[in-house]
Each structure stands twice: as C-alpha cells, then as structure tokens.
Image: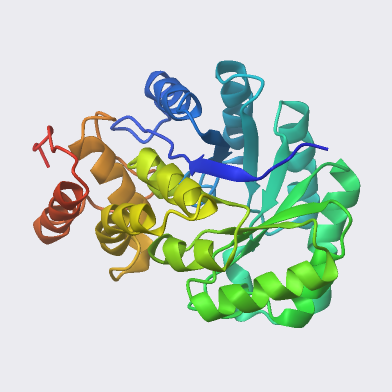
Length: 311
C-alpha cells in the first residue's frame, strides 16, 4: 500500500476560447506542479478541475494524460463526481486502469438536499468493491448543506476497508478537529488531510497528514513550506507562510459567491502568466473588474508579479 501522506496540487483544466480542453497547456500545467520538490502528487478531476461538468470520457482521458506525463513516483488522485453509482463505479474502474493511484469520491451536488445515510454509504461501497483500490473521501464544507457528512455517516464511510484518506474541507477548525478525532478513533491509519485553504495553519497545528489544495498551483512553495514548518515545529516560519497564503485564500475561496472559486483560480493563473486564458467550460461570464482587482491585490500580497493585464 502506498503512503498517501503529503501535499498535492489540485489542478485545473485549461480551455481554449471555444471551451475545449487545451491539451498542450494542460500537459505543461501537470508537468510543472508534479516536478516541484516536496509535492507528493496531483489531485485531478476535482472541483478545481471542473469535474461537475466534464464528461466521463474527458475525465478518463485526463487520467491517462496525467499518468503519461508525470513521474512514476508522483501519486495521481482522480476525483469522481457522478450522481449514478453504476456510472461512477464504471468510470472509476477506467480511471484506475489508466493510472490513477487513488479515487476521491465527491458527493454529487444533489446530496445538498439529501439526508439518506444508506444511499451515501451504498454509493461509496459499490464503487469501493468494484475497483478494490485506495479511495479518498471528500468531507464538504459546513456551508454546503447536507453534502457535509454527519458523524454517523462519516463513521460508516470510514469503515469501508478501501478508504485510505479524507480530504477534510469542513472549512471550520472545530469541525475539522471533531472529524479528525472521530476518524483516528475508528481507523488511526486513515490520513486526515486538511483542505480548507483559509484554515490550513490552524488545522495543520491540530494535526494533518497533508493536504490536497488548489492554492498549490499558485503558491506551491508556501503550501509545502507551511506543512514542513509545522512538522519541524518552526512556528515563526509557519506564520510567515500563513501570511502569504491567507490573502489569496480569502480572495479565491473566502469571498462570495463561493461558486466563483475555480474561475478565480484560472484568472490568477492567467494574471501570473501560467495559462493563456481563464476560460471556463460552463456558461459563466469572465470575472468583473472588481473581482480581478481583488485578485491582483492578493497576488501582490503573496509576492507574485502580475504579468498579464489583459483581463
């Protein structure tokens, strides 16, 4: 069994102006962040990767492309976000076949209105038994309604033998602490990985086996540095990294509407010259001037230079 502990960059999917995947830019994006010292792996097909709108063939191809361009040491985690459990299990099989080391099961958005513990468990268990490969859970924000699993549901999910880790995104430190304690009481070997970007410092202090976050595609050295400084008990250095991370985390994830987060990530990457455009797959319009100025200020606070001002 692989050791999944560490820092992962949650990647985006670059698009051309017609909304098609720009594979040339995608490959550069994947290579860049997989080759950073201290980066354990990549989370592809996550929310930042627009898993809620790419079709299943595209998501499987993304796994295949990723595995072909990163080193064999790079751990590839692929998100899985489908309403239909049978479709999800079939796609997960293909993702594993094409090189995913682990599958992260996201709660479909309809679950925000659902409180059916058996359905949630059965969805995960069906996928687990189908692929018989390592699985990561996604614990949603406390602001995401019933998508955030209650303790009884979380306990049942943790007891699925294929579960190796949790991307813990409760977005509230006390809830993170509760869920971490619950997990470690039941299965101490399961990694609980803090993933609330604004709260990484406090959650790392409580304890974390790593993190899978999209800010690692903008300020990877700060995310890796924060994690290492906490492990090494260098708290003065940790505060320095936190002060780099926090303005960007606030601008991208802590500003309403939260649904703009992926668009903000792409705009930041465009502004710092990492991707040619910030096109989204869905019908969302480009960010307005107020949003862009807010992101520019956060980029500057992080010590990065804006080189593309065409927005």
